[in-house]
Length: 127
Image (cartoon, rainbow, N blue to C red; front, side, top):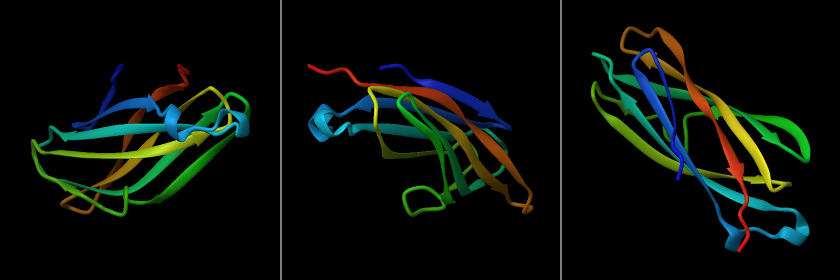
């Protein structure tokens, strides 16, 4: 599968997405996608993931945003040269779309920056 990668201020975000036909319902126009995220901290100090912001593009529905604290119920601290993995999902109304966004990251001194999540594509492939 394709991996989409972007680095911001020493934090590399890599995304892979998959269509889950067995969880989708084509007749109801619910297309279920799972995505796997890896965050790597190449900086010299730990960073904490405070918030997420997603822009979700659905080819047959209006774009929408999702925002909130942390990811999957966590606000992970990622050590210098450390890695954090998680997965989540998105349901679209069409066969394809895309997602992109940012993570608000906090340094030890309390300053923050936005780590960019690369735009990645969601494409249903039916068997």
